[in-house]
Amino acid sequence: MHYYKKGKGGRPIEIVLEARGVRLVLTTPPGLFSSSQIDLGTRLLIEWMEIPDKGKLLDIGCGYGPIGLFAKAFNPQLDVYMVDVNPQAVKASRRNAERNGLEVTVLQGNLYEPTDALGLREFSTIVSNPPLAAGKEVVESVIRGAPERLAKGGSLQMVFAKGGERAEELFKELFREVEVKRKKGYALVRGYL
Image 1: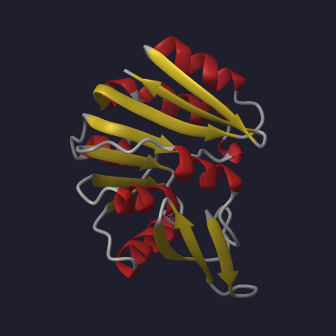
Image 2: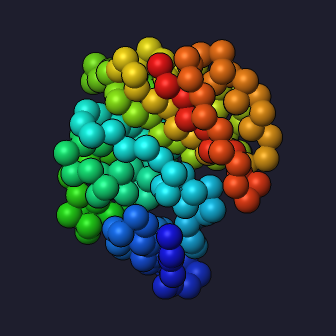
Image 3: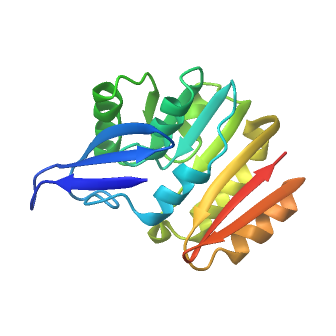
């Protein structure tokens, strides 16, 4: 995956990303997590994530949209839902989806609340790169909430910077199969129901 950026100061920044043979152009406003470039954890998750052949994918804490938008670009047949609590992130994700010609649903709200309100369950995949600043309670809520929202055989896929050991333990408690890959100080964790 490669990226470059344009923009200065308080102006939006344009990032061109290539992964798995797909190229997306994303614009990110200042102030969002990793607004000047795609962070390494997100890049690793985009490269590593397993994309289902069909069904629904949920990106929790989508920011300006790179993970969910790449998932949709990798498999246009997926129904992709993206959630963020920050209204600026939701707006940026919607703009980026439109700019790249990708049909996704972007919802504002906390974690699973927006999709629960719509009665959405049976996701094939849930993905997330949770911000460290959110705290371990948020991370644990994502992990604990996934099994009841995943379809049989579905997966939760997350990336963690330092300190992901507790999250890995929780995955092992809740999922029948867990894969962990370590790369450049990150843990990529995938759990299957």
